[in-house]
Image (cartoon, rainbow, N blue to C red; front, side):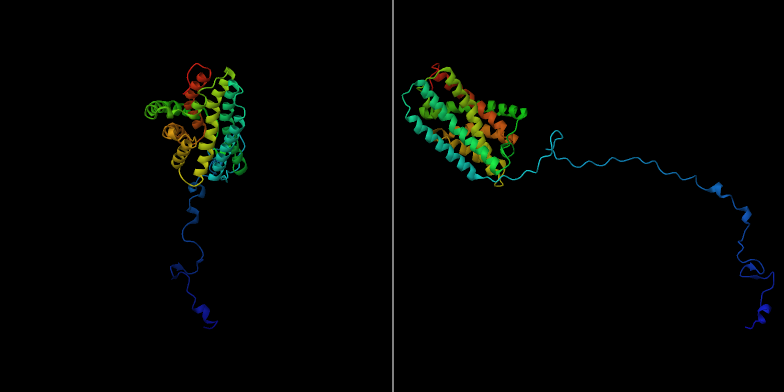
Length: 309
């Protein structure tokens, strides 16, 4: 198309092309702009930020054993002692007992009070040496006695130990009577037989009572329901296996084989206190309660108030 044809082909004014009248501005919007509603009349209210409530941070998880009253403890490590530690303690116990027996054999005939004192030392020293060695082993090869032997102070454990000790007497006393009727004089304990003809002054008698009723149970529990129990649990077995093994070895280690069945019965409530609480203090208390009556009879015997059998 030439330039001259452009004016001829332009649509005349007033003719609609594509719905729009020729000659009008194509960009002019259809409708009356002046009649549009005011923007402020239909707009939402002015936007305001929602009120922000600060959320406190979540505290870190706290271990049940953690206490704010003491600093955080380092993670517990597995102790590095086992059955061999118990065997070593038993060898030391037997060696100390034999050594004292050889030493005191030279002093026979020095007097009744001296003989009673020697017997008291023969009871106290070997078990103290054995328990002390057990504690040293836990310090050198583990976390110490409070962790490895589960030895900690608790009034609840004392109450449970008293309950198991007193409850056990209702079993052990009748069992002792029946066993004595069956076996006869062989049912007497080695300690009772050793003190049968011995007399002592009140001071020595009190020392004997403290040894039999308090010290010996403490030391024996450290060795059996402490060191031996921990060495068995280290093998990955449950507490009932430790219960059975320690009860049996406790009865056999007294070397009173005629009384072994009775000692098994005596040891059961003591070991149950250890299983129930999972700690050593309850079994110590139960053992001490069990030894109270024999210790009292023994003291009255060395004072001459009762015959010692």
